[in-house]
Length: 629
Image (cartoon, rainbow, N blue to C red; front, side):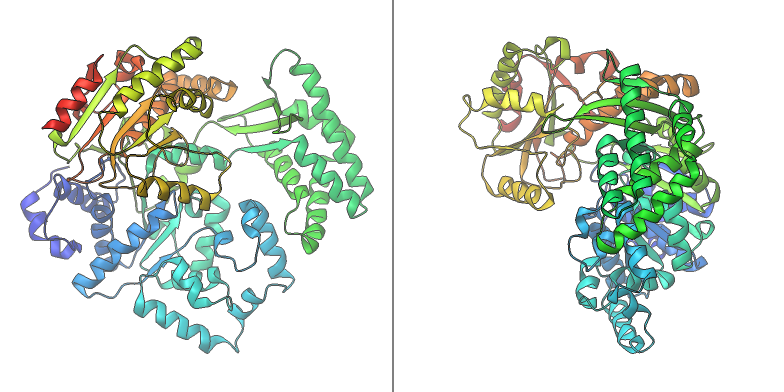
């Protein structure tokens, strides 16, 4: 696609670019988005931190949408990213003094005024909310539909239009527990030019259809921007996957007994016995095994009418939710429904034996989606334009394959920050490879890490492939450094995670130890604070049955099974971790890959060319020289 940068600069006022200067490569990025939208094509963009991805996609999208009366959906993977988008839109509104309406939408559960709903899963909350609405037991929803309170609602709408763009938290405060925040926001969405939402609002077919119908929008008249698109394939597969466990069945049995539906409890007990039988047949010498659809389906159907039982469970679930927020019976019903209707192509079925935290044996039956394009293809075929972007979207061809694009424009941009501000090192002589793990190796890694830590002046992030590796190395590291060590805890809730991050930010020369795929591996933005990132080991997925099935499926479909299912996902986690260091053109920092496998061509070739990796056995010397410059 030919780009005339002179013309695009001349027309930048028309594209609502609110800043005085362009960042390196940004003008070309904006022009690519602009032309893709106008030609109704799809765009896959690898754009490192510092490119200004948010404004580069929003400015041309909003300009085109306002002219043609289309809608822009900006989809994110995290709630925290909504604020960046809203701030960008405020700047556009302030500079150009134009009238457009923005709606900020998060999960309905997180917008609810009832207490304790956060403990429910999204599906459990959906069922609970539906039950309350249908039986007129929700005062917030009733008020949102009341004719008598229409004037009061209109005042809220006017305030949102006048003071916006507002965050969903600000709208929640305006509603003041009088109306349903979701219903008020949905009404705003009907007239909104741009809607900031979470992935599942558009990716999940059931939620998408319901949401679009509620807000009177059409995919065919929408420009869809997907931020942090490296997460897309995994999220899409998760949306199509289902799990049934003996824990869920046991709780459903208790519900049936409590509500005196003995027949349902007897069938549920039979379900548990079927899982027990399958365990003895298939898991005698292993913790997981492939299973065919009919091996479970036919046994259930032989005992009771399979589909009638699903209906019975939904009936029980409705009764349970009249007294409680959560129903395990609906979880069983949802699984049975999915198990019966999904095709074999693009799915695998796995029986697993696990242990609870207290050591209790749990049998799980899993329906796992292998093919993310099953859900994404309808969006590709029906939307006006899809823009998938991320700072770690390499190779772009992989995402074109996995997401199901027959044709898409793929663009890769270089890191815009000064080369002299960053040092990227691969340190050999240590590894977290499973066959090499030992107390001696953990001690050696800790020693090398402590030597590196002493040469980096400032706060440092350390990432590990697993909590087990982190705990073993940190035990050695505590005796080798006087710096404060802060460890990520998988049991922490959101508030506790934020408290730990705040302590890290405010404690000089502290070190935050975290897991590559954990809460701090991506999405945190601390410009000027982090002076170094040390990535210990290679965060390869556990080669379990699901991973091996993925490898086999991608090998048959794309002839790239190991790359797509095993190697690239690990490198993407690594690059996301590395990206926490340099967050602005003024940041200066060191990224250390403490693992000898990174120098192997298999892995090294996966890194961006502009990373300029240096392989060394003496990282302390290189780091000292770097900070002396």
